[in-house]
Amino acid sequence: MSDRLTPLHRAPRALLLDFGGVIFQTRKREAGRDDLAAAIVARAERAGHAIDAPTVRASLDAAITALGHWKHASSRRLEPREMTHREVVGDFIAADLPAPIRALLVAEAGDVLEDMNTMISDHEVRPGIRELIAHAAERGIPLGIVSNAHSGRSHRRILAEHGLASAFGVQVYSDEVGMRKPHPRMIELAAAALGVAPAEAWYVGDTQDRDVVAGRRAGVGAVVLTASKHTDNPPFGIADTADAVFATPEGLYEALVAAEEPAAADAPVEAPAAAPAVGTRAALLIDHGGVISSSTPDDELLDAFCDQLAQLLDGGDEHVDAARARALVADGRTRHREFKQHQRASADGIRELDATTFWRDLVGDGLSPRARALLEAEAHDLMFRYGRAKSRRVLRTGIRALLEQCATTGTAVVVVSNTVSGRAVRAECAAHGIDHLIAAYVCSDENGFRKPDHRIVEEALAIADADPQRTWFLGDKPQNDAAAALALGIARRVLVRGGSTDDAALDAAVDDGLATDVIHSAAALADLMTSARDAVGVATP
Image (cartoon, rainbow, N blue to C red):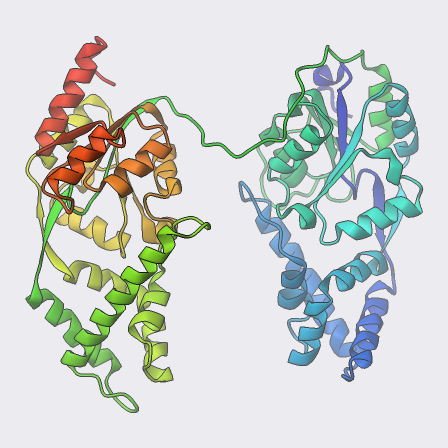
């Protein structure tokens, strides 16, 4: 046991336990993998497919090893997701098996994984657990389970077989909630279900990389480990440490018995909801096209690009000259506009089209399989070159001075752009000689969402660690830029004339409260920002 007992002097208002390594000790069954292989062979036979057990066993051995590596890698992530049953079975368990058998096992994935969990290992209740459960019940301390699991239903079944199912007020399993530790929301969810805040709960696990990290991220009152074979062998270095480590849950039971009564209950806790973090700094979020630079269509640039596209696609089963290449691009652009119109009406957020879909499916529609394969393979490079070939860009008046003023006052500048190529946006800003004045770029093709979806602006605020009330957004499209900024509570939503929106629509956006200001150039925004700083009597944001 460690000597860090201070957090354990007062009993928790709820106790959250891991399944394996805490409630149960698992031991590999000597014939477990062979039994599972035989069960899979029998399942295949019922469907009319023949396969030998050694082939299945070899696939299982490879799968279990690979899953171990995947689990270790996942525990390094901030908010790891759990794979679906079908992914675990299709991509790991049955990856080496014939297609019809793999399809069968994927369709029956839930049953396959329940078999796997119960056949490969035996489960034995760890010493001290029954005493712990009884003592918690006597003191009115509710219990919950928070566990990574490929088969939560098998865990529920095992608990019932050992007479423990009724002891737990909530059971949170990764396969059932779609996330896995160290994602803190698993603990937050369990605590909320028991009516307490995470800070009022102890979390007990057996691993450093998953359990200790998850507990710290969730802000529990104490993190405790009951030692298992995993405890002293994390897959990588872990900065966080547990408040106490016990050889068995018997030590946890003794600590709970010795702990004083918990403090008075806080207010009832609701289920945690995802909410953007609010920073403290001032920032300028700025659109690119029409704001940082103005663009003019350039047939010479586009023709040169279409010549290169024709050279890529022409040959064999497909004749593509420069004229056809240009027609293909024009058709792709039309379909892209239709896609964006559809996305505006979608309930699944306003998503950006990825480069592969644009080139292979929109531009390449109707081309030969060979040509479509070329477009798919070259999609990202094509999109970068196309992004720079669509038009010739000129830096707008006042932009450089505005960005230099932001640098002087310590105001972080983040470009927030709906674009087919964030790489092209960065290249254009570098060509203008202003990239050193920009902290970061959040581009729709990389973020996955396009304005006015709030997620693209939310990422920019997080990068700048910005307080929305101290943040400015400069754009040229009321329904994209101003609307996205308003959704995140950004105080000053400024639109610049001379972009893609006519003056009447810009003025109407101010009248409607969508925007706060309309200006003629970036120089006017620099003056507005200076006036705002002077009004609160500070020299910098």
